Length: 421
Image (cartoon, rainbow, N blue to C red):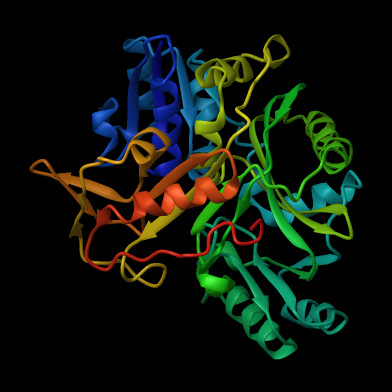
């Protein structure tokens, strides 16, 4: 099958890697891809979605998989479907679940899906007034897409008011912050759950846990994610069932009623409070770095799952996972997440250790290729993934792989999966 993958990160690299590990032969194309994806397929540079759809049609692309949120919110799926192409991802209307936090919170309230108490407003006065009714910490969110960085957890009321003022004035996140959500802080533990949906049916993947903070012990600023592991022992079958019944089913039914059936990945950020799952947020694509650890755990065909979801036939297949665990450790560039860093050459040692060869790999993200040399040139550069029969074994292997990757200014956490261990 000829498959086009939109995106340039570790998530897209991992999806491609999983597809190439299948028994059937596939030919892969990336738009735009990164410096390492050209070893897996062909990188394209066609930024206009109409032109890209024409290229896909002319070149017999049988499936397109959309990785990041921006093309989904911009309506790439609708454009491809107009051209009669098979594409995995939600429509522009359904992508509002991530594109607008205000839309998402109001949707949750409308369909009685458990979420934190909140106000959505563009009035600084109303936002301040509501913040005063909450006890600290207080959560302040920008409405639009902010690359995973539009959420502030204010430790006191003054901090919350500064965050509200800076968002509503356009200072923090430009137009994305001209409407805000102020909500109560939920005290529990956070999980990432992913449902692959075809509008009616869905498949719930094993729960993962992400590590958002830059530094060990969950200190430092929030990032796009510094590592993850799956499956997490913090979830039992009873909790999965609550998520199915209280969150996923009413969301799919609600989106149909809204005239925007949800097809694609529904990423549910969950806070578990006293054993009850509360919805923190929806995203409309795989999390990154969660995708990097879920893909290698799949033992059934990844491409078939995406294809069946994109053609409303998920009911025909059974998706299977290995009984092992995966841990992914992000290696980031020197100035991440504050500013861009000077490109640095990446040197990867030759692997002689059998366990590292067999049970670890690297998913490349923020990298470029210049004259055959790979450079770290993005914020999150790559993810070292380890697989094992226990979380500890998977984690130890991931860190062994990290020890073999070198570039100037490399930055990583040393405590990924500590919650489970």
